Length: 236
Image (tube, rainbow, N blue to C red; front, top):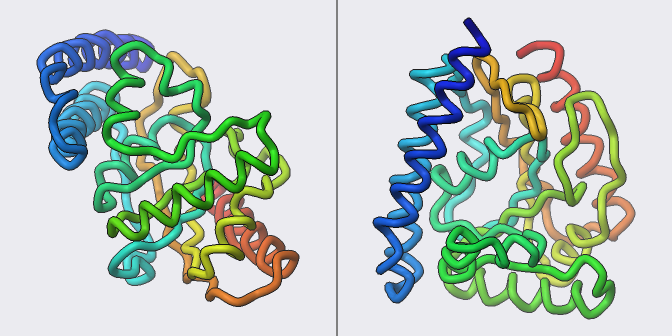
């Protein structure tokens, strides 16, 4: 039954996505806010299908830690779910993502038009400099920035080193960082065809204040996120 429900979701999700992308094509000439609003309709429909077909819902913990105005979020990344949900939950967020995603036909066009922070992962110092500059522009426009510190999806319980991009943003932007932990990978794994019923927990942790040195910040960020993620992995 789980497989049948998951396959039903996959089929309906693909059909819904194709329909929205076709219908919204004229919006490519619209302002970024309009495109983002249309994207939220697509995401809301996708999460509704996930709930109805699969039985997968979510809950938020630590909402009191969500500040007002532009802020930098450093989130655990276990599946595609958090990219969808955070796009819906936050106010027109700009995600730090690999530039290859902008090359995907239609979908990538919308990403580029809505305004994301695309990085060349082989660019090293020049890529970091551009990322910081783009993030400053997003903050000036009143938009929050979301970055996945590990740079890729990591299964629950697995560990990968935190990349220097988050440290560069923290130090050069001099802003607080809100760590985000979750357990989405328990239900929607990387490249997993079958999604599982359950309740995804996303937890917003207390902000790390600006002004720490790079090493102290990285140690504190990783400790907070990994400790919470490990707890959520065994207490879903």
